[in-house]
Image (cartoon, rainbow, N blue to C red; front, side):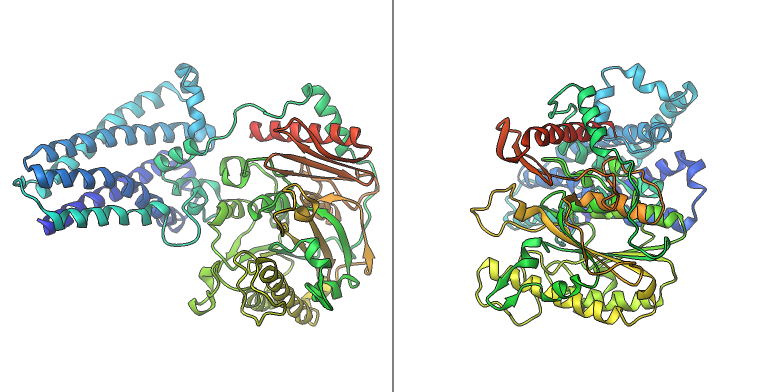
Length: 611
């Protein structure tokens, strides 16, 4: 009996896997005019990169038949076979109809159907308006024909491999095996054994959105967006829209001159994003030992910005801010919404469009925190991740340690064509702070482990910079180093504390026209794209990003946490808790700061909803 169940279940699962491949092919064929623009290799890669989602949804489908088979063992008879046919037919009808509807509207919408489509079903006539009568009729005919063929094939398969009615018995061993087998389906449901669970960005592999969209499993994507749906109305309506817009425009107004600090407008660009490398750690000392001595050593060799504030408290909130100039929203991680992030401008996309070689480096899994989809669509032609390193180098919980990544990066830069624009994200100073170095700071408590991890990353960075300075490419390169965020180093520190969000930014490299300079004006992490774009004469398509190096830009920083926002100027600070409907801390001329902070958040959320 066990052999029979294993064989029949495997064949049934294989049917569904092939079914999802066919569904993807249907979607691609419906987008024939767009699909022919890509090579056969590109099209085949959509199947390769989408296979994990297909396996996941297949695992979901298999759960019910496997659990039902246990009752079949005890009852016997042919009821199970009949139920399996009905179950399969219903799934085929619903899924194929969904895929065909998705395929018809995709050319008009530009994205796969997600849960937001529910809002259109209140008026089906309006929802179908995008499609022509011919498309609707041909879609219905195709729907009936494909469903008929697939149901017929599935029934034949079930008749062949499940044709043996079981006799009633008490199969204890078989029951235990099925329970273990069902439990093992958690692996494909999660997307594998890695740190990062499966998310829509896991299927993204190309800078071309169509290829990424084709790789998605339509059913899984719809379910995912239903489970993680966001507010449909702005919960931060503090004032009339006209008033909020007026205050926002005043904040972003800039009629000043650009302060040039680079010696040419087409330098190489190297952006180094340091995990948890907050300003608190840069200034911290333990006795006579500095936590980040190498970073401090380089401050006098460049332009230092000590009053930058991270957009949020996690890496997935920092990446859209740093690369696309988009602030963080309370309780929302916009990086998890490819449909919205694909509309963002990106500083590396701008560099790519002007002939730069673009490359993103991360020693971990880019599927973590949904970064893969964002990185794929924000201008990076090349991605180097843990898979590009040998297994012996993947000895960190998160992947490859920083010193190994920096060594490989140095070699790549040495042979890269110019101009290049590289970005690298470190990882060793992430929890659990395990680094390949003898501890400098004694103690196994969390703070000392964190300090040791920062010291290690700082050491790896310093050695990289020492060697990079001796190369030819350094003379023509702008190196920008900043942190993604810091961390809460004590339970007594409020979640909105500046110590969590204040980060350092340091500009280095031979492309600098000035050195040994400190710019102390408060600014936000998401101001970096507009600042880089201004220095390189690329314009400013970023709505929320201002040029820090302008004589006319406003002096303020804005960041959010789950319960509220913080707005900081050179003369005031406001820490607002939206749930408490008030400010929990104020300094200086706080009335104006509170008004501008509320206006900024209101306009930001309206923009989020409009994408």
